[in-house]
Length: 187
Length: 167
Image (cartoon, rainbow over all chains, first blue to last red; front, side, top):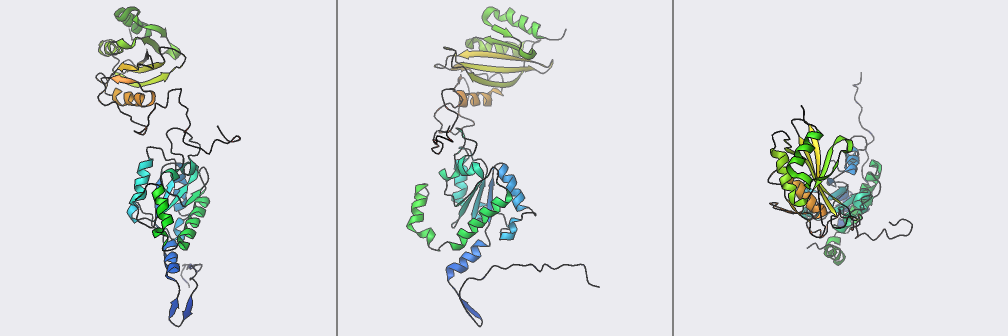
């Protein structure tokens, strides 16, 4: 009698990058390998301040399961993380805090802005609320919605993965990137 | 006989005479107005009197009335007698050009943060406050956002100048 154990036979591996293959070796570009490794092991840092944070909790939980995309490990120290997920209203007083968290992250770092408030201030068009976090830190992907559904957050996360996988290894040393950082007064 | 609004009014009138005006009882809560120079004396009397015993400051805030020339800012004290469970409301008015009011921090510790908040949003200058600085808004803010002459919306935003979706 067989034991009542079901093995997961639906495992899906990421595809190998293009390259030359032979007996016992594979030659491909370093950039592609690094991109592949990075995009499938992103450590997110949740910066959740309001209702979008609740949606993020659902995204992390078993039903939507962000871990499927290689983000099992959510870090709570900015120094360990690659992706800053800003979810919720950021008041002007919170702005410098967010900026400091961003500065504490090591390069390469990405920012995902989740929800109307983080993207543009949303309905809080008022004197105390920051009108979009891109006023203080550079943002890679914006997720619209008030709040966005977990699917939307996952979609934004996949867009981040796309960016991470395709990023050139020299991008962060380039003039364009330095210009971007200077425009935010960083470094 | 338990404490009620008539007794409070009678005691205050005995002590301060015609200085206290505009007696009202909206929803049964005794409300009156006094001159701003007397605000501490009235609060002290309400605190010390063995029958009145208003020793709890529930709330302290301001209201801006742009149309009342010369007394644009109202500072409102909500006091609570915890023994008899009676609340009263005490208002003082001040000119917005000279918004100086005596601080109640010596009498009520709770007034410390409340006066800082009132200063933060309305610019009421509480003389005698130990640390009158902004409490909720960013320190760099250079105006008092709850005064009516300032718009509620964030003025740095440019994407809402649209004719259809603008303000």
